[in-house]
Image 1 (cartoon, rainbow, N blue to C red):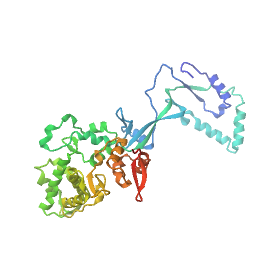
Image 2 (cartoon, rainbow, N blue to C red; image 1 turned 120 degrees about the horizontal axis):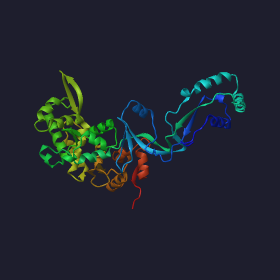
Image 3 (cartoon, one colour; image 1 turned 45 degrees about the vertical axis):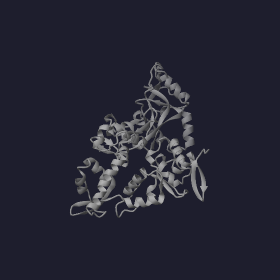
Image 4 (tube, rainbow, N blue to C red; image 1 turned 180 degrees about the vertical axis):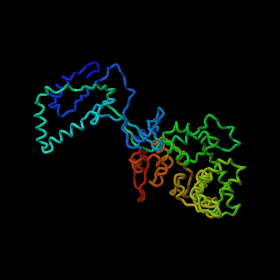
Length: 426
């Protein structure tokens, strides 16, 4: 009913009779729902369907943040999860009614209990007949019903569905690209307005705080004077070379690298915050002797980086010559492996001689259509293993790498091996 109308106890009894109900089966309270005046606009209210995690976050008073620029689909972030937000329609109208009385508050539980005791021995058919018979009984003599008016704040035909999803992190690398650290001597070239602290990055990237912190570690962003920055490739090579040279200078076994001596030896050449971060990126703990913790360099990580160094300046490289140069470039005792070239290089074994050239995943376009275009321009046919490192970041629980290839590429068989090429070839 409209908000200006008043419904009397007699009006309510007529409705009860029309519905073939009997007052003995109802509580003494009737709640009358009143629609708002059409001039009142409550469009600022939205409904969201929450899972248990989101509900617990709200009940605990934790912050939920909607994120997204104008060109991005909106996402919702908690402290440790990211949700995709989609508008869904409902076939039924949803009414928002504050302070609506439910069973316990209206006395319905007690009414149902009394009726249940009366009808315990009745079958469902008998109970149905009893209810129908009661509806024809007179309610004369019963006290007036207690009428409680409840105002409907808004009527909804849509609501927001929230589904857990992967954070959108491709933007992060681009944000930090403009402020790469290349050494103290080149800091004068950096536009200070491009420097970003954690909160500035968090405001721009669609990810939770925990997910963003993990990604900053993964891409090796370093906190330098309060701002997160990537290292310039050549500068990172310079620092890593300093660190690796200490192995031979000090005759250290590969599993007994001293963190303390490494930092102390290089503190005059490299800022301590960068040294500490680089050491953490490239090593892991091994043994502890005499109160001293020793470390070992992550062999695969070191070898892969040194492969990138060789490929960066070579263009197309004779594969055999590259593999030899690569083996010669790594510290004694470390072993190179061609599997480490996945995601950083393309190998063409069909040419004579076989060749290799640098092709790093982080250098590709963010847009998935553009990325596939560049991939197939660089190499006409790919196996799943070859192409996976370049598209893995776009995979989801429902759309894995194989599903992405089915959607964006064409499959065929070459020498008994399944390969993928551009969907629309000229």
